[in-house]
Image (spheres, rainbow, N blue to C red):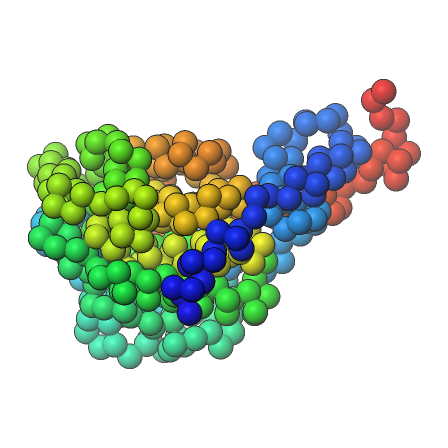
Amino acid sequence: MTADWLDRIDGEIPPADTTAQAAASAHLDRLTKPPGSLGGLEAIAIRLAGIRGGLTTDIEHPVVIVFAADHGVAARGVSAFPPEVTAQMVANFVAGGAAINVLARATGADLVVVDVGVAGGAGGADPTPAEGAERHGLAGFGTSGARLVQAPIAVGTRDMTTGPAMTRTEAVAAIEVGRQVVAEVVDAGADLIAVGEMGIGNTTAASAIVAALTGRPAADVTGRGTGVDDPGLHRKIAAIETALELHRPDPADPIGVLAAIGGLEIAGLVGAILAGSAARIPVVLDGFITGAAALVAAGLAPNLSERLIAAHRSVEPGHAVVLDRLGLAPILELDLRLGEGSGAALAVPIIRAAARICGEMATFEEAGVSGSD
């Protein structure tokens, strides 16, 4: 289904609804405050209206979806952590002990983790889901940990410095996983989707994607990721330059770029971002890796960026490039660089507050307060 869906996805994601945005702006100006005095909250409320096609007065069921997979390029010494950390952290997500678990609980969001290609299986060598997790689907929410969806397309990607990270078929299959997971959470009542990722080596893949799609030099869009030292950063940039020279990915072919130098979890994010936007659900991007996925998705559906919300600006140098290309202003600036959907989860209460301003604040007429002329 995905190939046909991708062929028509552009038509399924129209521009933001400007009529709804104008109505939301007029409504905000009738509330008991000087026009524009809530600043960025009003901008978020107007953006929500454009996405949903009408005034949004609450966010009742936010869901954070974290896609996880391993990267063959990690063998090149591009990360401060070994590849086995991907599976270990997925187990931590399911157990409820990671930062994203804490932040999702604190912000009232449910958490779903999707294994799109974790080496050794999610949770370690044993591919059996941890206790409380769900295999191949969602049976509900509300656990202290995450719901685990196991849908691996491959055992991680291949080393992009010696060959394509994925076949085109694998990339499209991973996109389909993202599409299906979003369809399930939307059917379960999700009215906001925040996206995150986990995968040792994935800032290398994201930097390569951003360089390929924007034409910027690898050194301009590559940061320290997990905290690599100077030699590690040099290895990382060299690996990206080698991959770009080898594959010469065509920015006019976003799926080809993704397959050559991307990651399975990045492909899953592409599917989730496209599916959420097509369903008129606000999609909240986390940091650099989700931004790189959004760049790929925007290459397939040019109106996409009008339906996205940027949670924060990370310290990764490529993230500013991504946000500028997508035309997105971040809600938060907290020097975050964790990933996992952490920044996206932190933005949920602010987005919810913007919606509730529209739903709960009195107008001048209702409050009997004199408005400005």
